[in-house]
Amino acid sequence: MKIIDAHIHTWQLADGKKNWIREKIAALQYDFTMDDFAASVEGYDVEGAIIVQSSSDIAETDRLLAQSAGDPRVLGITGWLDLASEEVAQQADAYLKKPGFSGIRAESPSHFDTGWLLSDPVHRGLGVMAKKKVPVDFLMNCTQLTEFRQIVEPVEGLVSILDHGGRPFVMTGDTSAWKKDIQGIARNTQCYCKLSGLAERAGVEWTADTLEPWVSILLEEFGPERLIFATNWPVMRLMASPKYWIEALDTIFARAGLSHSDQQKIFADNAGQVYLRGVEQ
Image (cartoon, rainbow, N blue to C red; front, side, top):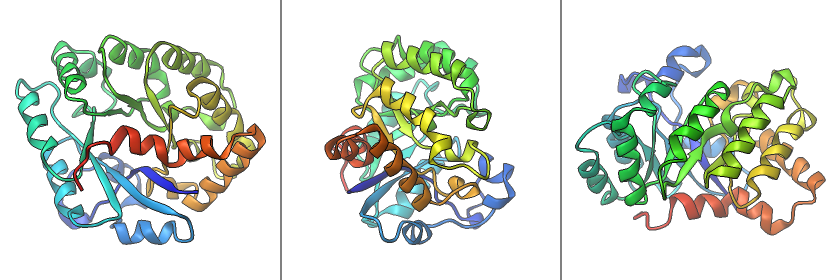
């Protein structure tokens, strides 16, 4: 099975960049490079990965593009642009000309700030992204999914991607509130959803059985056509390895009777369609 990992992070402590997730979790306060990632997925047919920003500044986008230039393992960069800026259209035009640029993540400078995302300037910025066909990732807490729908639904033509399945509280085993929100998003928008981030929120002793109810809901609501596989490496190392995550999904997909072609959509094809169409390598 060909695999594209649509969401990883790389960083080096020496870069001196402010990184909220790295600063929050001691186990992530190390260098993580493409060589490290490649070692973690050895033995699988991983075509490459998309590196996602982890700092809310344009310099992060430049850094990722520069560090990955010429590395065939990096298929694209999901960077950051200031959606509230009056110059966001010019910023987008400039980055769309740069090899490897594949989209942005709409992350507020203070993180998880739905007020910023719902503001008029950001709404206009998202409209610009829609017109220019720039895919936009969103990192939301599961308690913010109602607001997420309010953010993306009014923006016609926006290619939006909900990161990490909407970050549900998997450890609780209670899917009810999250399921209702996911249904609202999937049935009323054209949003894609990354099949990632569930293991990190499932507790230490999770198994495929632990994750199956959550994955099944995402499959039912988004279908194989709008789910995008990712690992969220190296964050996922807190609770799992890419190998264990892939094996769990293989088990769940087999139980669901998912065809090889539908699995291929999730594991690679959808990522290619969303992020890599027209990306200059």
